[in-house]
Length: 66
Length: 256
Image (cartoon, rainbow over all chains, first blue to last red; front, side, top):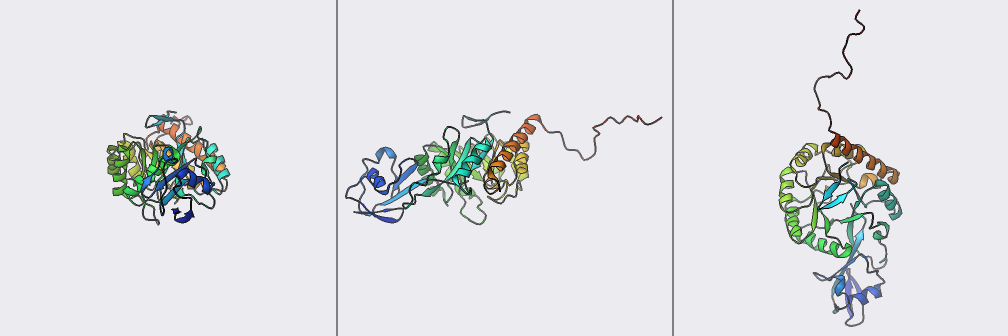
């Protein structure tokens, strides 16, 4: 299936969860926030949150700023 | 020197640092350490999925620094609340520098949206430190809305112009029941010292340190100026007078 991560299209095995997505993207989970559509998904739910076709995933982390 | 207390947390340093504009994370880390600061701001960004491991947090020791994520980039209270919740999730802190400045030219805070967001975020349990216009009425309104401190600007963000709002900062400081952190526009250690002498509880500095030729030395200069300014405030400055008052005895010892 296809999902969008920060507006980029990503191919992913059907019914993958967020932990699996992060693994595929080789993104370290520490310091990361994840939202699917308008909903923020806390890290405690990343294993059980199944992604669906065309989900819009937002991955955020800290960066330099004043 | 008295300790600074915000939301029950003690800080030994009254200098907060921003992490923007440093030429490298290594230099930023050295400057943060040299500043003696215990609170540093970060922004949020979308992860670059081509380069997912570029991580500023590796350079900010959590035992030494409290993180203060900001909401830079949002334009409304609604977006600020969403950004705050993302920040809380990413950084595992409910401390927040609320900043809503939709106009990129002057980066002045949107007062209406800032007040609205502050109220909602405080209700949700965030420790909110709002960046704001140097408006004494607004400072009281933010305080009533539950802000843990107020952060009025000295001059526009990154302008290095110092305390062009000083008359209003003075009123805010006089009336505040929460700590006043002068944020934005502090371009030189003398500006920071002036804010502290005036009775500000802390200052937040970023550009002036990050863009200095030697950011590490500049960080230390700010450390010293903030300490000097605070000590002067606690020691109480003498009154300003319009006429001279002799420091030496005026005995006419040469009169024969």
